[in-house]
Length: 274
Length: 274
Image (cartoon, rainbow over all chains, first blue to last red):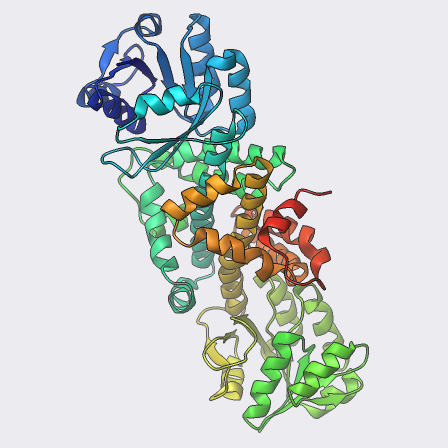
């Protein structure tokens, strides 16, 4: 059995911690500077608490970073300051170039990760893809758990590349749909578009209706994820505009972080307000 | 029965002409400066040929413009030079602001149009949406024909707004998918992405496989259409980047205009070549 530190357990991270606990591993989190809601989530997930990063790192063999993408490098640097000697897995939605920066700090101890699917409340919904020299350590750690963990062939940052490609479509096309609903609203043709979509684009209207409520509370963290994706396209000589625009859409919704889910009709209006 | 001039019948325009002929109307085209393939298409569609625009305009009560979007204003201006007094319907994929420019030239004789669906080889596949003071004239013209013609409520350029919103998703998301396939190829993770899509995004892999061959020969004209859509977003204070990027993707494919359909795998590589 292995002791693992999760940095920093939000909804996804605490569900990953809970999957480890269920398999008999020890899952730790660091309480210093974290919110009451994080404390509640970690407790519900049966995770062990340590006050400081130093104390937490002293207990574990593996660190898994699951945090908003804009903090990925900072979290890695904090762990490095403590001269941590175990495996460091960055499972965040970051560009391969960002993952590469972190990989270079940790050398062979670095495992790249990408999570696809919702927080793990049951088996089979969610996959952790991993790459790098010691990726098999992470596969073994989660073997038989609710988190389906799979090796990605290729270079050390392949898992991040996969995550970027996957979210590029799901979150990118949702942002595009929201922008289109806003455009239709601006021109007063929403009901005609609805009729045409229902005729020729099966399920697209329903999908657009779901996009508003479904992204209301996540848009604040989708915005930086879209910027990582835009960077990934740019680094391969491909147009970054799809995801720069998606980031812009989600940024305009970021104020809804603590709101109840908001209808697409209302978000269509919000997107055009200054 | 009404005589109508189509400017300038490509695959879509000649199928619209043929739908008119089937209802007993006269459908004209102008041969001056047009290619042999246009001549063959127009003949197959049982359209009447006139050599010059002046001669064609003298024969008809209605002009319908169906041409690549970047020529829409030029075609309108040529018709105006001849002081044409009938109905002028622009059925092109242009921004409402472009349609507005044309509308102002023709006043109440202007009907705005937007075609959704493939060229008309059978009933029920394709709709012509129309708006403007005399839009009902166009509805009456096509009544009972293979082209399902519908009024759009709203202002004079509502039909163009609808077309922009519709194509924004269909062609915009196809371009995004092609760019994602290219990104996955750049990172060597295409087969892993395929497996994940097949697991969690029903039909997305197949759609991406179809996008390359399906757009090979049309990309050259999708590129300017995407720029019209980008302009439409920008005019409403919404991010234009989705469709600037889509235009970029299709522009990189424009060299394939006369090619046989090309696989998505090959287009994925082409998109990264300079």
